Length: 98
Image (cartoon, rainbow, N blue to C red):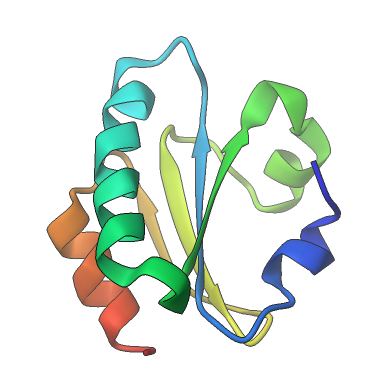
């Protein structure tokens, strides 16, 4: 995985989904993230982070519930949702910053 600072150092909002492959709600997020990515195309960056492969980052961001979705804009955490979130909710939050 590239450095976290590089991931959020873009001119668009960044939606990061922390997940684990063994958790059903994490797997359900795949289709929701694809819908968000398709709807907003290059206006948003969507990144999935598997917590077991990125333990330090998960610990630093205090990820305790999976999935957890975080939106960054201009290096700032602007929204956080724990548990399954549908594409409508994610699009609503992202559209506030587009």
